[in-house]
Each structure stands twice: as C-alpha cells, then as structure tokens.
Length: 222
Length: 144
Figure (cartoon, rainbow over the protein chains, first blue to last red):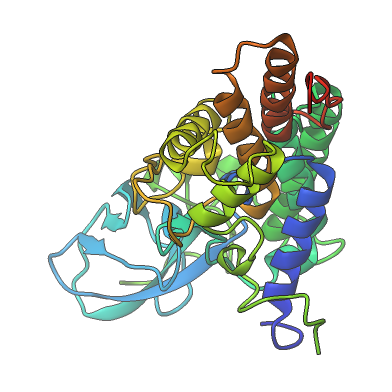
C-alpha cells in the first residue's frame, strides 16, 4: 500500500534520475532494461514478492493451475488447507500446483508463491515494470546499487567503472540478503526462522515444500 | 507552474531541439558554414550523411535503437528532408549532428578539412561513448 498517492511513481523517478546522474552518457532505454533485470534478480534471489492464491480442491484431482494477479510465478513456497495446515505439494510446472495425493472432499486451499516482474516494455519501449509498492521505499537504495553495479560492469562505455561496479554489486547482494531475511522472518525483529529439527518435524521436505512452518500441528483428517 | 522553456508532455519526443530531419540538416548547414544556396553540401548528400551517422551510432551504441520492440530494433533511414521526427534521445542528438558534419566533410581534400572532419567524427564518437568532447581543430581554411 502506498504511503501517499503517487509514491511508487516518485520512487521510480528518483531511482532512475539518480542512476542517470551517476552514469554519464547512459540512455533511458538501457537504464530501464537494467532496472528490470535488477528487479528480476532481486525477487528471484530473495523470494520477497509473495502472493497467496486461492483455489478449490476437488476429489480425485491432483493438479491445479493457479494464476497470480500480477507478475510471474517463480516457485511454490507453501500450500495451506482451510485449517491453515501445510499440505504436501510441488510445482512440477510453473503455475501448476500438484498434490502428491488426491483429496476426498471439496475444500478451498491457498498456495503461496514467490513472484518476479513480468514485462520490461510498455508501448514497445523499455519502461519500469509493475512491482509492489513496498519495494522501493524499503529496498530502493539497494536496488539502485544493483542498477549502478550492472551498468558499471558493462565494458567500453562512458559509464564503465569496474571497481565501483563491484562495490555496488556487493551492496546489492547485501540488500537481497536483507530482503530474504526480512521475508523469512515475516518482517519482525528478533523472531527466528526456526523449525523443529528434521527428525521431529510434522512435515518433511520429501513431500514437497515445507517452509514457513506456520501452525506446525499434527496433520488433521482430510 | 513549470517554466515555459519546457515543452508538451515532457516526453523526449516533445524536446524541440534537433527534433526533425529538417532541424538536423539546417544545423548541419550552419556548422559546415554552408548557409547560402546553391549549397555545397546539398540536402540529398546530407541526408545520406545522417543515415550513415545513425548506422554508426547503432554500431557503437546499440541500446539507442535495439530496445525498440515495435521496430524490432531497426535503425531508421530517412528519404526526405521534412518534419519527420528523428527518434534519438535528446542527450545524443548533438552527437548525431556531429556525425552528419563529419561524414559530409570526408569528401573534402584540403588538409584543414581532413582535420575538421576528424574533429567532427571524434566529437560524434565521444558524444556517444565518451565522457567529454575533444578539442575542435582544423581552422577555417585558406581564403575564408
């Protein structure tokens, strides 16, 4: 949710203007493409853009296609049933939740997926993609270093600067780590990304995803 | 209220400086000191110089053209000196102008013209891939 109207637009404008000021001779097209690639790496490495997608489970069907409202699905993080109990599921194809076993009754479930940006172009020319409102206010500085680092590492350009580029890419990787940890700890301070040791867990990873450890109670009757 | 020095919807296309083919050719005539008809550098030859400069720009700065999905990254080529928009980001328009002048002057045989053509082509190159423009050399030539 934007803190004020037009915040995302302002943040994008700020980031691209800052990058353009530092990178002498860079074109808008090149900056936008690198902004897109930076966001893609950021989301791919941090799993920070998530969406819960509801779908209805019916008897004797194991595969369910799901579609996000925005962006592109990268991977499945978790599947919960109506009692918020994690279920054993995998995503053999992107966008297809596949249960290991069929269910006997109709019930809603929720798949949590990690997503990334979708479109690098608008009206045929490079433009900032759609991404959540919280990204730039929280991680804008890190993403700026990603754009700068990517651009500076390009050879034989007026903005080439390998040394500073490496420094910026290191800072970008720090931002990715921060986002990954923030997501893993559900944006809390002091909590742990903790789970029972493997042999004591109620859900093993052999059956598919088992992150989050939300409500790790014994499995209910299906 | 923005200053009246800003134009249109603030897009690159609205920037009036060196916006059309006519603008480039007129400014090339100015830099080449060829303002009085009959022109030494006629419009068809300057048009070719412009198209060649755009091709060279695409070689050393592919990003200026290749990211246009609608045109599949094609480099534009102009057939007429008219008010057709030249789709170049504003900060690189001066480089294209220098490229036109440099290519046009390559036909000359005098020494001063060679060095002046070289200066134009260097400024073209530096404007696209350098941090600053080099010195303008070559003088005005004998009898001018």
